Length: 215
Ligand code: PRP
Image 1 (cartoon, rainbow, N blue to C red):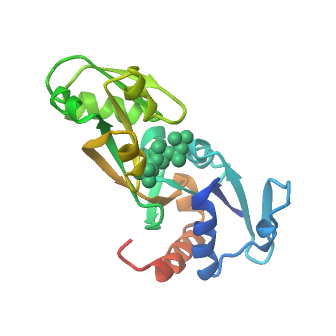
Image 2: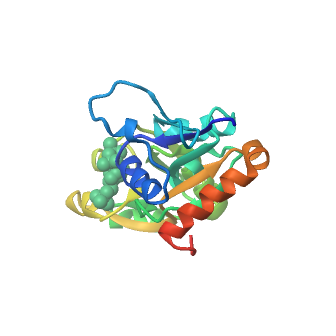
């Protein structure tokens, strides 16, 4: 039997996702050692391998088949635009992709005026401004602390993730438009889905049994 390999996005989501997998009988004790420098973990009984990767790289591993399965945020899935099957909404890490900025920037949206948009998600931002707002936007790619951009005059608005909204509030900014709700998802390589149909469908069913069938 071949190994089924799972790529998990490093960080907050990975731990919660592993807890759900564990409840579904898909565990990996090796991975729990906080001091380990190992990159890939194996469960020989299940014939499964697990590894952690930068979120943005997870869809790449899955599209190329280096991982059969990925667990990653919907924000990354949308941004990367890879050819994958999205099969489960884990319902964890719920937040929203938004256009945000000072209230005064609201009138700029959809106005046809040129606008500068700072973001970690250039593809999502470009798509929203072009296809939803029909507005020419200069997309300025940043790597973090996006909220700074409108404060220091780098851009009029930002496209970013909003969870509690406190980062915006504490910086005098607000949600101006909501683009899409987000949460952690399971994605599957398109060939693996056919070649390992039985095993992957069983994994999906076992996980759904833990998180509820609506997902
Ligand atoms: C994310 C996001 C916002 C913040 C939203 O940043 O980019 O800045 O969290 O959360 P809130 O609505 O609960 O305040 P993250 O902490 O991942 O770091 P970053 O700024 O470096 O991207």
